[in-house]
Every structure is written in structure tokens, then in C-alpha cells.
Image (cartoon, rainbow, N blue to C red):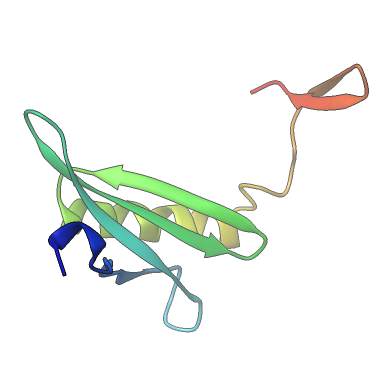
Length: 95
């Protein structure tokens, strides 16, 4: 069996963003590398939305995700859809 015909597998690392000790949200983290730098990217499902963030280091990513989780849960970040307009029957949000 040659290398091309072998099954490939992908390792997934779990990551957590928390608003407080009772409200924790889990998602996946990916480590990516560009030509000049490396960074981490995470997607976490928070209530009905998807929270995406990236940072150069895992520590900074964790702090930013925790802040965004608090903003969504406590301050109602996604409670208002904002101003939108409709073109050809499709709603577009103007942000």
C-alpha cells in the first residue's frame, strides 16, 4: 500500500470560551501557518450564533473569546440585528 492510498486522519483540538463558571461554550481550534507567521483560529457555538476568532497566540485567543462570550451573554451583542435593507427578496444587513 503506497502513501497516497492510506486513509488520512485529522486531529481536532477542543477549545472553550466562558462568560463565567456556569456558562461555558466549546468549539474547535486550528493551528495555521502562513509564509511568515503562525496563528490559531477557533469557532465556538454560543447560543444560536457562531463565534469565530483568530490570534497569534493561544493565550490571547482565549482571553478574546472569553470577552466576546461575556458580550454576547450579558450585554446582548447579537440581540439587535441592526439596520437591514431588502434587495430582490433577500435581506442584507448594513453593518
